[in-house]
Amino acid sequence: MTGTGDVAAPRPQRLEAASVVAAGLAFISIFAGPARADTTDQLLDQLKAKGILTKGEYRKLKARHAAETAAPARAAVASRAAQPLATPSDRYITRLDKGIGARVGAVDVRLSGQLAFFATEQFKQAGTASIAGGLGGGSLYNNSSAIRSGLLPSALALNLSTEQEGYKVSFSLGLYAGGNNIRVGLLNGNSSGASVALGTPGVDLRQVFGEISSPDLGSLKVGRDLGLFAADAILNDFTLFGAGTIAANASPSNTSLGRIGFGYVYADWIPQLTYTTPDFHGVTVSVGAFSPYQQFDNAGSYVSAAGVLPYSGVITGHDQPGFQARVKYIGELAPGMKLTLWTSGLTQRHRVESGDAILLPRGAGVRSMAIDAGGRLDVGPVTLVGYGYKGVGLGTTGLYFDGVGYDGERRKSSGYYAQAGYTIFERLTFGGSYGVSYLDANLADYPGRLGDGALVSANASTIGFVKYRFTDWVTFQSEFVRSVSHNLLGQGVRTNALVAGTIFSF
Image 1 (cartoon, rainbow, N blue to C red):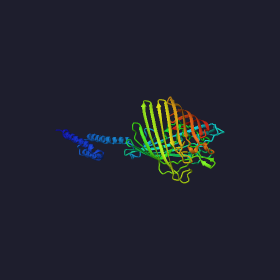
Image 2: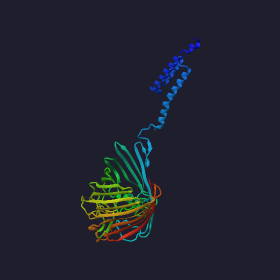
Image 3: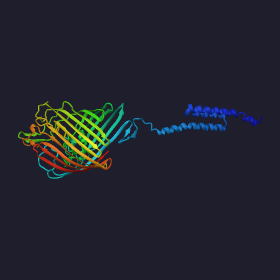
Image 4: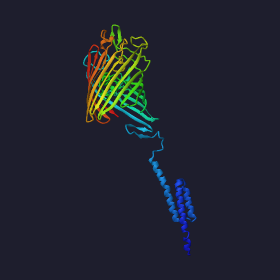
């Protein structure tokens, strides 16, 4: 054998060793991973130093090992890049699928609201009768102009909601503001305004409540929100996004009246505990306990032979909450035909306290009761709404306004409204409505004493409107409003008004 053969003889051994090393490297790469990279490199260096691996084999195995080590590292980097930052799951922010707001961890944060301003022109009053508690009057001598809120004030509402242990839990807060200066009064921002320089508008924190619900158990609402009785009457009023009757237009308060007092009694925003059942084929039932309100003399006083007397009694004592309930149905009768029906009622006990202006002994009580019913039919471009109510001790315009006479006898009240609208091009809507609220006299109210007969007996209005939706956020509405009030003597006053303005809503 030549020397060359002596040198080449170990070649098969080196190849066998190289195969063993390669298998070992694969084993180490699979089970040891990147953490053993330094050990593998040292092993290759030792095998090369002992002559078991040639320089070519050494370079090839080193390159292979480097590639196998780098691949998991690149995959880990790519995986980390595709994942959000290592932030606690209840802290990160993502966008909502719908609405204005964001999702903060597991909590949906939503904002909604509107900007409501209207230019109004009320023409001077026709008729000179005195109508105590009437809403249809104005100035006897001049027209009045204002830039003011409509039936809705401007608002910003916040809602937080999340899912916890199978329940949906939410919190709502509504901030409402009129555009005109407020005058401090018994009705706060709903008192007549003040058209005087350096005044400021008020913020009406009318809505703050929490709710917990589940599809199987229904929902429980705790806090201050719109009442159940007459709520659907105002929510289906076409002047909700307009103005309606603009009483006290020379010094506007936070809002106009819409049809409040002209077809329904204001539902109001009341502290409450209200339970609503799960939806059963479109039917829900709501029942609630409400913070009680007093019997209030809204009409004022008159001069009699016995002196100055109030038109209505004042009862401020409450020994139990008020109670309200509603049954509501919403269903689709056919494609493009939606029907909404509702009926609601209330009852509250009022008791005489020391200092109350009423001819009843202290501790005596009266109970107010009322019921209403209404419906809305949407058929393609046509919308029809009808509503009516009846009560005793309920009063008119606001809850328990002039609900009892000074003698303590409850007054009956009733009212209704009907309206229709037609929409073309899905943007332009024409419509009109008529409504009236009655306050019936009791035996002590009939004329016979000086000024007694001036108590309001009816407020009625006729409204025509046109509405145009510029965008999803911006709607323009213009109205002609004719408002009439009568007293117990049959005397009346009348005012006409023009309204034009916009609602920016989101």
